[in-house]
Amino acid sequence: MSGREPVLIANGQGFWGDSILGPVRLVREGPLHYLTLDYLAEVTMSILQKLRSRSPDAGYATDFVRMLERILPTCKAKGIKVIANAAGVNPSACRAAVIAVVKKLGITGLKIATVEGDDILARLPELIAGGEELRNMDSGKPLAPRLADVQSANVYIGARSLADALAEGADIVIAGRVTDPSLVVAPMMHEFGWAWDDWDKLASATIAGHIVECGAQCTGGNFTRWREVPDMARIGYPIVEAYQDGSFVITKHPNTGGLVTVETVASQLLYEMGDPKRYLTPDVVADFTTIQLEPAGKDRVRVSGIRGTPATPTYKVSIAVLDGWKATGQLTIAGPEAVAKAELCAKIVWERLKLDGVGFERDEQMVELVGTNVCHAGIAAAPSEPAEVVLRLGVRSTDRAKVDRFGMEIAPLVTSGPPGVTGFAGGRPQATEVIGFWPALLKKEMVTTRVAMEEVR
Image (cartoon, rainbow, N blue to C red):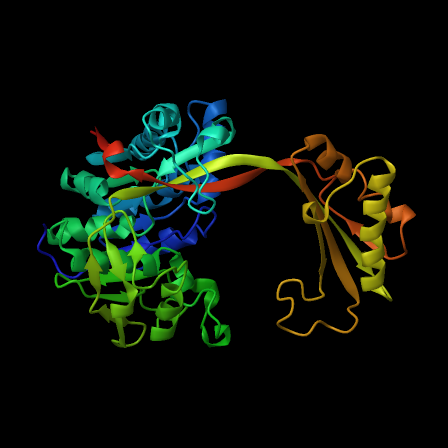
């Protein structure tokens, strides 16, 4: 417990691939105590697990390490601590890479911690043998029959181990599959010394994390009234200005682009929303219907009144399973009657495949004519006759050979289809794995997390 107030916590990455300028500008353009960075999504875990299987030094978000090289000198000078879920499925390798960067920069006195225990892939056989069925939350089916197809399995752990690392003096905390809000919950719990059964405070910290977890999406990014958002090229990434009583203000650095209003914050609150009265996390169940939003000045929104109840006895587990093969190809078709010609091209592909004994069921086919209202079909009127369209064709099957055969029938349309087929890009479509999401629940007592720490002297 530091006693300082407010505590300034920013989020500079909403996903792996977000602008590197987010964290760079956050540490340079104003005061900050903590910088959080969210890199992981469900499919990312299976990709990282596959990379690790090929190399023992892979399996983490490499962009995180490169970005740290740009910001660490400033973080050291300003005393900014970094918390990220960049460890993926290989925390020790990520920590080693970060330590190498710290040494390269000649910075000393930094403590780098990793939080481990969320990766349960190797434990699945023992867990299933012990009675944990890990039933799919959507279908109710047990995991055992699909065990050979599993690519990754990670528990969504909470903020406590992150807070433990901060309590041990960590300057950089790197975790695997923690929940997105946990990156913000941990520093608030650490700074204010709140009890882990103070459900209202935990719920407040969780909602603070939820608001900023997608980066600039609460400061004007992806905002419906986008014309009102100034200087989007220099959009400011969000900052939580947190207070001891559990209230907080969402803001951004002065003189940056974007905007923070009740509307931009409320829009983000609806992101990935299920039951608003029971937003489930490993730490608490938050009641979003108790949130009070009010303007608190230019680009400042005060959030208060939040209530929470005890957490559930289970963790959610994100399991990725191999679920077949897919391929997608596209052509640009221009000139008069572009839509009719694109529809004919699609028909030609399916019929030629049948001629060669390769058939796809209707639900294994995808046909999209980009430019004819495929994104919002049935909502907005399609243009009467676009000058060109992009034909996207795709297939999905458990038979890889069939999927590869499909990829051979796109390019021939340039010379053996209707006129106006002017663009074929990306090469011949190849079969790629379809990764299915298998959500499940696991009793909390089956999971043990741990903190590993190393100091660069």
